[in-house]
Length: 215
Ligand code: C5P
Image 1 (tube, helix red, strand yellow):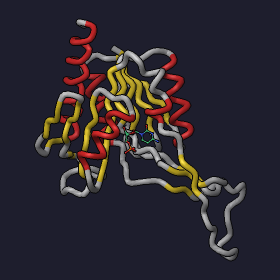
Image 2: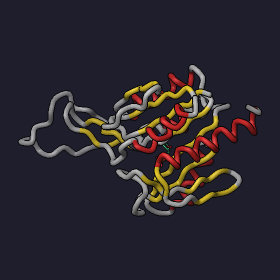
Image 3: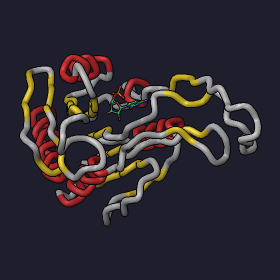
Image 4: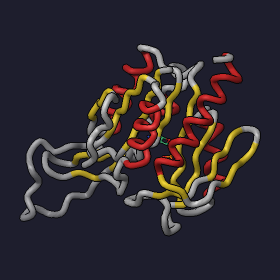
């Protein structure tokens, strides 16, 4: 099986040296890629800028912005994939204009006009047909309602919801507390390492493939 994983944050530049980003470290996605590889699957990991080493045996695709990530995902999906796990914390907005030179502090502070980035999952729904698709929903409030909405809107087989405000969950830690949500129900998992969550995600994907294709 060929598994495509996205990970990490994206950076949205306002001038050549400054960018907007988020707290994602890439650990969840790297754990998924490592687990897929260990189970013998061909694995491609598209990641925004992170300080982690890419797992051995995984094909690494490094990107910077949300638009770069969209292009990389499109290109991988066009070559065919069996499963997609989107853990990347893609920036929702980018500055409308990227200055060509460094903005000077002596000038008046910039007033940023932001524009929406494309939603990679929504944009690639057509190319993902036939793949088992898993997304993530990192939330601070109304966790379950938002996740269920995203499961449908983003045309996913499963969404992994987590409340990033809970100790031991979300950004910058090696553990997570997640709920798996599918069209047929929810499963709340206890606090576990990101490696263990990755294993459960791969279990789901392999089971779904067997149900769908008997392989
Ligand atoms: O809408 P939200 O950002 O909470 O959705 C999270 C899920 O959607 C994750 O799986 C993330 O990788 C994906 N996503 C995306 N493109 C975006 C934003 C999020 O594919 N622009």
